Image (cartoon, rainbow, N blue to C red; front, side):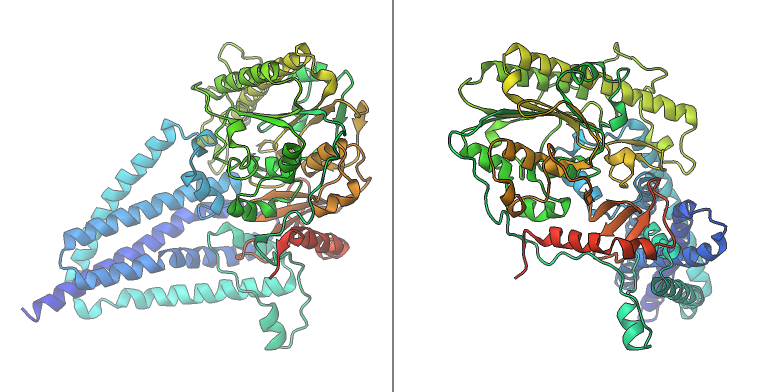
Length: 632
């Protein structure tokens, strides 16, 4: 008995080790899908020399903790059946999630471990922002079933092999793998360190292909240990997380102007959609006493950061401390103090993104986002009807801020079936096809974009109805009206689909139309941004422009500077639109380097001269990101 138990334990350990090693190999095979994003530069062999060992070491890192735990469980558990079920279930789920990660990365260029993905999966209301159809669930279910069968077969084979080879030889596979894995880790870490020191952006950017890639910062080590004269790379760091916002509150003098404010936002509205063909209602409206902003960008590449920038006049780097403290915007505070009433109407749930906990935290009773329509286009119509009723029935003696967010132009691009203006129009958005390595063919992509244009056409019709209600209620002459998008939408013009993935023009350029008292009609070509909205509103109502810097980072839309730094926010990263290109500035603790891309989102390899020229912009960005944070 005493000799038999150790034998069984040894057999289980060897089998568990073999299954772990096989899953490392399978994981590397699945993860090879990331390698399709290695750029074609004539230097692929050098890039592959880094990427292949980096792929292998990443999979080892991802499997290390569960692999060790399974070895420990194999030592104490006497049930091979239980151990097989436990491992089979985990390794199957691991491989399926790894494959899902490659699909996510194909579209968005970030990974499953990105905080935005987890927030999307867990936040209440996120079901309005993402739509997973039955094709995807079927594929996932098929993968889980197939994987479970394969893992069960592998476990039985591993047990049989372990029983044949004997207990004393169970360490041999690990020794063999050490001769493969340790050199791989050494090679890729050495290549990354060399690239970091030499500013080899092709290699350092490739590290983002791999989830949770462990970057090794070499600046201090090279200078202190090896005496290498290292040029410090520009970085932006947040010095604190507690809010100190505002530094001083703006005030609206009693008896000053009390113009009404109406903001109409269409989700995913690209600037180039503002045409007579795609948006006839707004195109006609824009011909009369409207100022059109032709050089305007959102404050972010997602609803969270686009709307946040508008209402707070701040960079998206402030989102997390604002959310943590449930701090509403100065704009809402000042308008409430001045006697304004509020009406917020959204066809998407405002728990995701968490606008109820931030922008509207002080006025929850004014938020209306629970409309019964099954489809987004139906909820758009219901939200617009609720807004129109509110406009007609509100107390005429009280000024108002009305805010409407329409969701039909968001994926999956919803519109009434009998209102198809553009054909061919895809019956649905096939995410399996859109996330494939080769992507959809051109005809399919045209059909998906036409579906988007049909949704935009419907949203335009809904907005036109709200504007007519405003006119019929006699409110048009004393209302500042803003019509815009929260961000744009890309259809693989720069290699991406949708938004949240990059700071490309397609994802961040949005239309802006403004009409009302004090607004000069015409076209504005100077650079403007969503962070200019809040200062524009409050200064139109009498706030002191000299105090703007105490509560906002924006400018005034009606008098913008001729040149400026425009900052666009993403999840744990910022972008600066600069003359030399787009500077991608990471805020994550896992990344260090500022990268430069051209406006087609192609990495600029020799970026030293651009970064040197834009050094002051990075200094200014760091100052702006920390202006309203407590550093002690």
